[in-house]
Length: 304
Length: 243
Image (cartoon, rainbow over all chains, first blue to last red; front, side, top):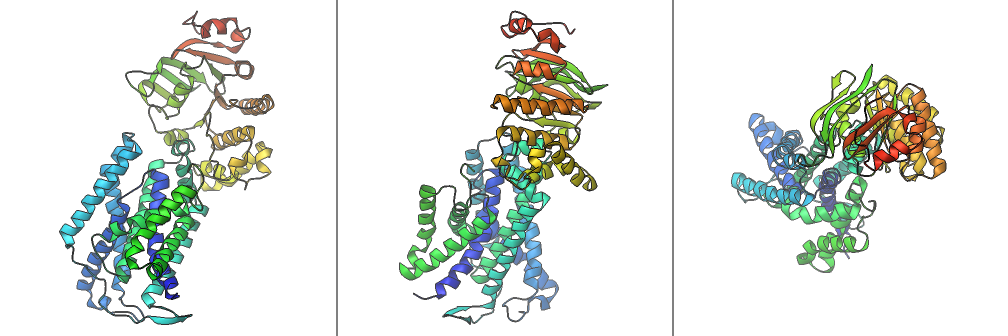
């Protein structure tokens, strides 16, 4: 078996893990499976691309690749704008749709169906604005460098893995050590009691959307940087995202990341063992196995 | 001076079927009051409505001079209301210290550590293991943590919904000893309780709610022999003037 599957799996798993963290946070705090999360990835990538285009128009030098990467300073700068715009998109959607349903005390299934509809609308809107033709952050080609033990990776790919590791650690510290994180965990366990403790639950929900949207945008940019940007890129990632979040245990940030890495590695090894055409089925198989054998996931709590 | 004033309160889950029907009473600062009544009388619904957890359809709730009717529970806490729900009143997946830290966020930063230390002094059982998950505590210790959390912000009024529910007699004794200390410290106490004898011993005044309406409001000793209470619970008396 080619050990390259380990690197391929870690790279795919980084994107899946980051996306799954956002998903697991919204799932545990807002208490519904948010089907729009995949589209936030795609919107994040396209919005970052748009901002990068504007920045490139303002200062052409920002687009020139910075060694050893395939992109220039324009992309990381644009990502800040992309994150801000994706956050605005999610907060706007919460204000006009999810927040209104919450205020009416709608059942979770109603909110899930609403998110499904919103997901289709967001995807169609993306296709309408940007067309279905793939787009790219960079046209520069990169040569994968040997890492030893028969594995190779490009600098962009290593950056993605490193950035994911940093983000996961920062986020884990935020949730476990800060007042905001304590409030998030409190709302996740019992929103009504959190209010009695003096926690402003709506503020916690806003923070959750902001973190989820930010991570979705970064995950979308990573996926777009390493492969390509398409309106359906988020939708295609939805099943792996849900599988990773459920495998890790709903509400667990390290769990979602580990779940993402396991899904990524399983997909990469499946490509070698049973063929690329079965790659998409792996997430589904893992999801079904987890739901049957350990529904609380690796780090989740029973009944959570 | 009035700590809590409730006037013509109608509350419940459906405006067409209110559970609390036009209840009015005033509680003065430092007073300890029991709210008693048969099952289904609306005691818990009323206390939750006052605490901002159940919709109020009509009437007013005032905390001191501030009208807090219909405010969300987190606003009420900031206005000086402490509420301890009957069940699920602590965060079991957070540590004892984290439970207290969440409540302490409402205080100025300089006061937080001092107030948490004061609560741990008041409840030595909690001080012994602040880093332990609250879910590992016994029933009585959970009630103590819930009370410590509510007291941490020095509320004007502390309301407790059946603090003895599900506890062994020994633990009930511990919880009521704690509540007595809290009351003696001058905190206004409002207690919904099924354990009538313990509640009447602790509080100086009792309100009896029957079918969502106030059926009695008077000194606790008037209910000690159980005769009047029996009549009220069985519906033989529907209204009693405040004595």
